[in-house]
Length: 360
Image 1 (spheres, helix red, strand yellow):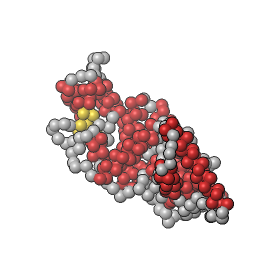
Image 2 (cartoon, helix red, strand yellow; image 1 turned 180 degrees about the horizontal axis):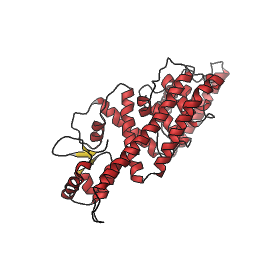
Image 3 (cartoon, helix red, strand yellow; image 1 turned 60 degrees about the horizontal axis):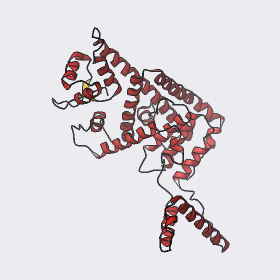
Image 4 (cartoon, rainbow, N blue to C red; image 1 turned 180 degrees about the vertical axis):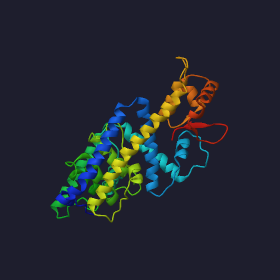
């Protein structure tokens, strides 16, 4: 399977990509700078909601519908409906995105980091099992078996000697499979490493969608491109929600389009992700300002402003969680909710008991 990048080096292709590339870079850098300068409660709240929205969008791109309220309530073990298989997949995508955002930039592409494709090569795994089975019949020194790294090195050296011996007798030299999608995707990633960061991320995402290196984990394509933007320093304060940008972008990606047009669509998705992140940050700032107006004239010791920040920083708040966070009684939380009045966030469970509120 071949992925040719020669097309984008032509002058016509660069002229086609210059506008979308500049718009995507500006939108991404602008929202990242806004998050870096925003108050911590607003930045944390925007990032927390971006994780939820991106996980929901990743399932939508696969044809699965998951309500955002269901995902938020399931996270808090407060389901109002029976959980579905799609909801379980969304929870797994959400957990993977959070792990990636919490890791150091670039760890996703390190040897000890996040596995972007499937596990080890089947041939190597079979060889290890075969030679381990043969070695198990031999007598071993207990002191040697305790040192696992040396045992692995011994197996590698033994396999190398066997390969050299086969070459001496005329056996065909084993070559890496050229049709391996994972290897092909990593090759494209290396070839695009000298291009601008946003364009390199768009190429990585396009190659993922075309080559499909992990058929059972298609959501990792946007995550890999977002991790690349973070590793290249274009998104320091957040992990871009590229699945959300793909879903809500102005144009639709299609394998049938030429490479230049596909990349223009993906650059538009990067721009859309930055624009949507900025819009959500504005929404949270406005909601916080409206709720803080209800705190005017309160005592300095009032916990109501802290409850407002709890609503902004967390997608879901219950009476019990607010009581623990604010070190007050549940009755005090109920009283503060009543004081917020119409500025209080929407109730998500639509029931009288075990209620939850949130800005989602």
